[in-house]
Amino acid sequence: MGHRVLVVDDDPTVSDVVRRYLEQDGCEVRLAADGAAGLAAIATHRPDLVVLDLMMPGIDGLEVCRRIRRQLPGLPVIMLTALGEEADRVLGLEVGADDYVTKPFSPRELVLRIRSVLRRASGHTTGPADLTRLVDAELAVDTARRVAERDGAPLALTVREFDLLAFLMRHPGRAWSRADLLDKVWGWQFGDQSTVTVHVRRLREKIEYEPAEPRRIRTIWGVGYRYDPLDGGPQQ
Image 1: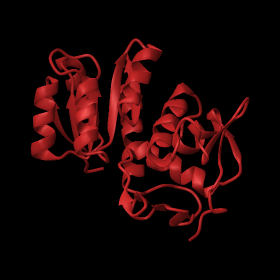
Image 2 (image 1 turned 90 degrees about the horizontal axis):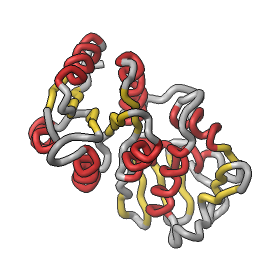
Image 3 (image 1 turned 60 degrees about the horizontal axis):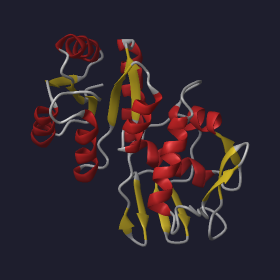
Protein backbone atom coordinates (compact mmCIF):
# COMPACT_ATOMS: atom_id res chain seq x y z
CA MET A 1 0.00 0.00 0.00
CA GLY A 2 2.76 2.45 0.94
CA HIS A 3 0.45 4.68 2.97
CA ARG A 4 1.38 6.51 6.16
CA VAL A 5 -0.85 5.46 9.06
CA LEU A 6 -0.83 6.95 12.56
CA VAL A 7 -2.13 4.74 15.38
CA VAL A 8 -3.20 6.69 18.49
CA ASP A 9 -3.90 4.35 21.42
CA ASP A 10 -2.78 4.28 25.04
CA ASP A 11 -2.70 0.46 25.09
CA PRO A 12 0.79 -0.57 23.90
CA THR A 13 -0.35 -4.14 23.20
CA VAL A 14 -3.11 -3.00 20.86
CA SER A 15 -0.81 -0.49 19.17
CA ASP A 16 1.91 -3.07 18.60
CA VAL A 17 -0.48 -5.64 17.10
CA VAL A 18 -2.02 -3.04 14.77
CA ARG A 19 1.44 -1.79 13.76
CA ARG A 20 2.67 -5.28 12.87
CA TYR A 21 -0.36 -6.10 10.75
CA LEU A 22 -0.23 -2.76 8.92
CA GLU A 23 3.50 -3.05 8.26
CA GLN A 24 2.92 -6.53 6.83
CA ASP A 25 0.41 -4.88 4.51
CA GLY A 26 3.01 -2.38 3.33
CA CYS A 27 2.10 0.65 5.44
CA GLU A 28 4.48 3.04 7.14
CA VAL A 29 3.22 3.19 10.74
CA ARG A 30 3.78 5.67 13.56
CA LEU A 31 2.47 5.23 17.09
CA ALA A 32 1.23 7.81 19.58
CA ALA A 33 0.34 6.89 23.16
CA ASP A 34 -2.16 9.68 23.87
CA GLY A 35 -4.21 12.40 22.22
CA ALA A 36 -1.67 15.19 22.64
CA ALA A 37 1.09 13.07 21.06
CA GLY A 38 -1.31 12.08 18.28
CA LEU A 39 -2.11 15.70 17.42
CA ALA A 40 1.59 16.57 17.39
CA ALA A 41 2.33 13.63 15.08
CA ILE A 42 -0.45 14.68 12.70
CA ALA A 43 0.92 18.22 12.51
CA THR A 44 4.47 17.00 11.93
CA HIS A 45 4.07 13.96 9.71
CA ARG A 46 0.68 14.43 7.96
CA PRO A 47 -0.41 10.78 7.81
CA ASP A 48 -2.74 9.44 5.13
CA LEU A 49 -5.05 7.94 7.77
CA VAL A 50 -5.44 7.93 11.56
CA VAL A 51 -6.52 4.96 13.67
CA LEU A 52 -7.81 6.59 16.84
CA ASP A 53 -8.82 5.04 20.16
CA LEU A 54 -11.93 6.59 21.67
CA MET A 55 -11.07 6.30 25.36
CA MET A 56 -7.72 7.79 26.33
CA PRO A 57 -6.51 9.84 29.31
CA GLY A 58 -6.07 13.57 28.79
CA ILE A 59 -7.29 14.51 25.33
CA ASP A 60 -9.64 11.68 24.39
CA GLY A 61 -10.34 10.36 20.91
CA LEU A 62 -13.49 12.43 20.47
CA GLU A 63 -11.65 15.69 21.05
CA VAL A 64 -8.76 14.61 18.83
CA CYS A 65 -11.24 13.82 16.04
CA ARG A 66 -12.96 17.19 16.49
CA ARG A 67 -9.63 18.99 16.11
CA ILE A 68 -8.71 16.92 13.07
CA ARG A 69 -12.00 17.82 11.41
CA ARG A 70 -11.48 21.53 12.08
CA GLN A 71 -7.94 21.53 10.69
CA LEU A 72 -7.85 18.65 8.17
CA PRO A 73 -11.43 17.75 7.22
CA GLY A 74 -10.32 15.35 4.49
CA LEU A 75 -7.98 13.25 6.66
CA PRO A 76 -9.56 9.77 7.08
CA VAL A 77 -10.15 8.65 10.67
CA ILE A 78 -11.07 5.17 11.86
CA MET A 79 -12.22 5.11 15.46
CA LEU A 80 -11.61 2.23 17.86
CA THR A 81 -14.50 1.88 20.30
CA ALA A 82 -14.80 -0.48 23.26
CA LEU A 83 -17.36 -3.21 23.78
CA GLY A 84 -19.41 -2.35 20.73
CA GLU A 85 -21.59 0.15 22.59
CA GLU A 86 -23.88 1.93 20.13
CA ALA A 87 -23.57 5.21 22.02
CA ASP A 88 -19.78 5.15 21.59
CA ARG A 89 -20.06 4.39 17.88
CA VAL A 90 -22.57 7.17 17.31
CA LEU A 91 -20.44 9.67 19.23
CA GLY A 92 -17.44 8.80 17.09
CA LEU A 93 -19.43 9.21 13.89
CA GLU A 94 -20.99 12.46 15.10
CA VAL A 95 -17.62 14.14 15.53
CA GLY A 96 -16.46 13.03 12.09
CA ALA A 97 -15.00 9.52 12.12
CA ASP A 98 -15.19 7.88 8.70
CA ASP A 99 -15.45 4.39 10.10
CA TYR A 100 -15.19 2.48 13.38
CA VAL A 101 -14.04 -0.91 14.64
CA THR A 102 -15.15 -2.25 18.01
CA LYS A 103 -12.80 -3.77 20.56
CA PRO A 104 -11.96 -6.61 20.75
CA PHE A 105 -11.41 -6.62 17.00
CA SER A 106 -9.75 -8.71 14.35
CA PRO A 107 -6.55 -6.96 13.20
CA ARG A 108 -7.21 -8.35 9.73
CA GLU A 109 -10.64 -6.73 9.69
CA LEU A 110 -9.08 -3.42 10.67
CA VAL A 111 -6.58 -3.70 7.80
CA LEU A 112 -9.44 -4.33 5.36
CA ARG A 113 -11.35 -1.33 6.70
CA ILE A 114 -8.24 0.82 6.32
CA ARG A 115 -7.76 -0.37 2.74
CA SER A 116 -11.36 0.49 1.91
CA VAL A 117 -11.20 4.02 3.35
CA LEU A 118 -7.82 4.78 1.75
CA ARG A 119 -8.98 3.49 -1.62
CA ARG A 120 -12.01 5.77 -1.53
CA ALA A 121 -9.99 8.72 -0.23
CA SER A 122 -7.64 8.38 -3.19
CA GLY A 123 -10.54 8.13 -5.63
CA HIS A 124 -9.78 4.52 -6.57
CA THR A 125 -13.14 2.79 -6.54
CA THR A 126 -14.30 -0.31 -8.28
CA GLY A 127 -17.28 -0.65 -10.57
CA PRO A 128 -18.46 0.91 -13.83
CA ALA A 129 -17.42 4.41 -14.82
CA ASP A 130 -19.69 7.15 -13.50
CA LEU A 131 -20.19 10.83 -14.05
CA THR A 132 -17.11 12.67 -12.87
CA ARG A 133 -18.84 16.01 -12.35
CA LEU A 134 -22.22 16.19 -10.65
CA VAL A 135 -24.09 19.50 -10.51
CA ASP A 136 -27.33 20.35 -8.75
CA ALA A 137 -28.10 24.08 -8.67
CA GLU A 138 -25.37 25.68 -6.51
CA LEU A 139 -23.99 22.29 -5.43
CA ALA A 140 -21.16 20.74 -7.49
CA VAL A 141 -19.21 17.53 -6.91
CA ASP A 142 -16.08 16.58 -8.86
CA THR A 143 -15.54 12.88 -8.20
CA ALA A 144 -12.19 12.75 -10.03
CA ARG A 145 -10.66 15.45 -7.84
CA ARG A 146 -12.85 14.57 -4.84
CA VAL A 147 -13.92 18.16 -4.41
CA ALA A 148 -17.41 19.31 -3.42
CA GLU A 149 -18.45 22.95 -3.61
CA ARG A 150 -21.50 24.98 -2.72
CA ASP A 151 -21.83 28.42 -4.30
CA GLY A 152 -18.20 28.06 -5.37
CA ALA A 153 -16.94 27.53 -1.81
CA PRO A 154 -15.40 24.15 -0.92
CA LEU A 155 -17.33 21.90 1.44
CA ALA A 156 -15.40 20.26 4.27
CA LEU A 157 -16.57 16.67 3.78
CA THR A 158 -15.13 13.52 5.28
CA VAL A 159 -14.33 10.56 3.03
CA ARG A 160 -17.63 8.85 3.80
CA GLU A 161 -19.67 12.04 3.53
CA PHE A 162 -18.22 12.68 0.09
CA ASP A 163 -18.88 9.11 -1.03
CA LEU A 164 -22.46 9.22 0.26
CA LEU A 165 -23.21 12.54 -1.44
CA ALA A 166 -21.71 11.43 -4.76
CA PHE A 167 -23.60 8.14 -4.68
CA LEU A 168 -26.94 9.79 -3.95
CA MET A 169 -26.41 12.45 -6.63
CA ARG A 170 -25.60 9.74 -9.19
CA HIS A 171 -28.93 8.05 -8.45
CA PRO A 172 -31.50 10.84 -8.11
CA GLY A 173 -35.12 9.99 -7.42
CA ARG A 174 -34.44 6.47 -6.17
CA ALA A 175 -35.15 5.45 -2.58
CA TRP A 176 -32.37 3.52 -0.87
CA SER A 177 -32.64 1.59 2.36
CA ARG A 178 -29.97 2.05 5.03
CA ALA A 179 -28.83 -1.52 4.34
CA ASP A 180 -28.49 -0.65 0.63
CA LEU A 181 -26.36 2.39 1.45
CA LEU A 182 -24.16 0.42 3.86
CA ASP A 183 -23.51 -2.01 1.00
CA LYS A 184 -23.08 0.49 -1.84
CA VAL A 185 -21.18 3.26 -0.03
CA TRP A 186 -19.41 1.56 2.87
CA GLY A 187 -19.00 -1.84 1.25
CA TRP A 188 -20.45 -3.58 4.30
CA GLN A 189 -22.72 -6.58 3.81
CA PHE A 190 -23.95 -6.09 7.37
CA GLY A 191 -23.37 -3.51 10.08
CA ASP A 192 -24.89 -0.86 12.32
CA GLN A 193 -27.39 1.12 10.26
CA SER A 194 -27.09 4.08 12.61
CA THR A 195 -23.83 4.74 10.73
CA VAL A 196 -25.92 5.80 7.73
CA THR A 197 -28.32 7.84 9.85
CA VAL A 198 -25.50 9.85 11.42
CA HIS A 199 -23.77 10.50 8.09
CA VAL A 200 -27.02 11.64 6.47
CA ARG A 201 -27.62 14.05 9.34
CA ARG A 202 -24.10 15.49 9.08
CA LEU A 203 -24.36 15.76 5.30
CA ARG A 204 -27.68 17.58 5.51
CA GLU A 205 -26.09 20.16 7.79
CA LYS A 206 -23.60 20.94 5.02
CA ILE A 207 -25.73 20.90 1.85
CA GLU A 208 -29.28 21.78 2.91
CA TYR A 209 -30.57 25.32 3.41
CA GLU A 210 -32.82 24.03 6.22
CA PRO A 211 -31.33 20.77 7.55
CA ALA A 212 -34.42 20.14 9.69
CA GLU A 213 -36.58 20.35 6.55
CA PRO A 214 -34.32 18.86 3.87
CA ARG A 215 -35.22 19.32 0.21
CA ARG A 216 -32.40 17.25 -1.26
CA ILE A 217 -31.85 14.22 0.98
CA ARG A 218 -35.37 13.16 1.83
CA THR A 219 -36.36 10.63 4.44
CA ILE A 220 -38.66 7.99 2.97
CA TRP A 221 -40.41 6.54 5.99
CA GLY A 222 -40.22 2.77 6.19
CA VAL A 223 -37.59 2.66 3.45
CA GLY A 224 -34.60 4.99 3.90
CA TYR A 225 -33.47 8.02 1.89
CA ARG A 226 -33.87 9.54 -1.57
CA TYR A 227 -31.97 12.34 -3.31
CA ASP A 228 -34.23 14.90 -5.01
CA PRO A 229 -32.22 17.37 -7.13
CA LEU A 230 -33.26 21.00 -6.94
CA ASP A 231 -32.56 21.53 -10.66
CA GLY A 232 -33.72 18.20 -12.10
CA GLY A 233 -30.59 16.06 -11.93
CA PRO A 234 -26.79 15.75 -12.12
CA GLN A 235 -24.82 16.84 -15.19
CA GLN A 236 -21.50 15.69 -16.56
